[in-house]
Image (cartoon, rainbow, N blue to C red):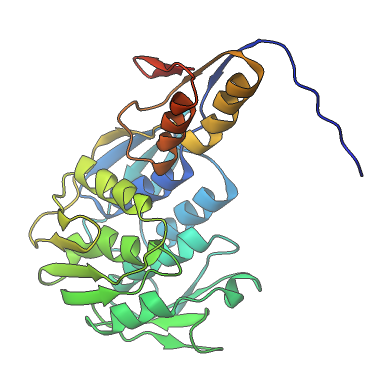
Length: 292
C-alpha cells in the first residue's frame, strides 16, 4: 500500500493530554500499599492499568471507581493473598514486573503468570535480585521467564540490579522498598535502559510520603520506618501522547495547545519540546497548558 501525505496549512489544535500510564501503574501500587485511603484523580483506564488494579485487589486492596477518580483503601504494607493464588498479568509486562516485589510482601507463596507472549519475556534481572535479599522465587517452566512461584520475605540490604533489559526491575524493588525489613540500598549496574522511568517511580514514592536518597542513577537508598500515606493524587498527562500534537504544529506551522501536562514533569519525553524549540519553535506555558 502506498500512502501520500501532503503538508497541511497552519493548524490550531487544542487538546487535553491523556493520563500517563506509567504514573497510573505506580500510583495504584503506592496507594495499595499505603496506610489509609487514597483518591487517585484522572487515572488512565486501560487494559494494562486494569490488570494492575485487579491484581492488587486479589492482594487485599479495596478499590472503587468513581467517575474520573478511583478510591483506594490501602493495606498498610501488608497485602493479603491466598496461598498459591494465581496472579495472571495477561500481556502487561509493567504489571508483572512492578507487582512481583509486592507479591513478596504477601508472606505466602503466590504464582505469577501471564499470556503466552508474556512467558517469552525475561525476568531474570529482577528475580535474581530479589532472591539475594530474602526472596525464594522459583521458575515453574522455562528458567528466567514467567510463570514463577513467589515465596520468601523482603529482607532489605544491599542489592545490585541488572536493568539492561528493563528499568522496571529497579522500579519494582523501589516501590516496595519502604516495607523491607531493613534499609534497602539499590545499586544499578551499568547499561540500564529507560532510566527516566526511575525518576517517575521516585516522584510517585515521594508524593505518597516516602523519601528516596539517590546518587544519580547509580545508587538509591530507602530507609526503613517510612511508609506510604493515603493521599489525594492526580495523575499527570502523558508527554509521549502529547508529542504528536506538538509535532503537527512544528511541521505544518500554526499552534498546538495541550493541557493536563505538568510543566516540571520528570517524564523523559518532555525533552521533545526542547528539541523542537532548538529547531525554531516557540514554547510557552500557562498553568497545566503548554503551547507550541
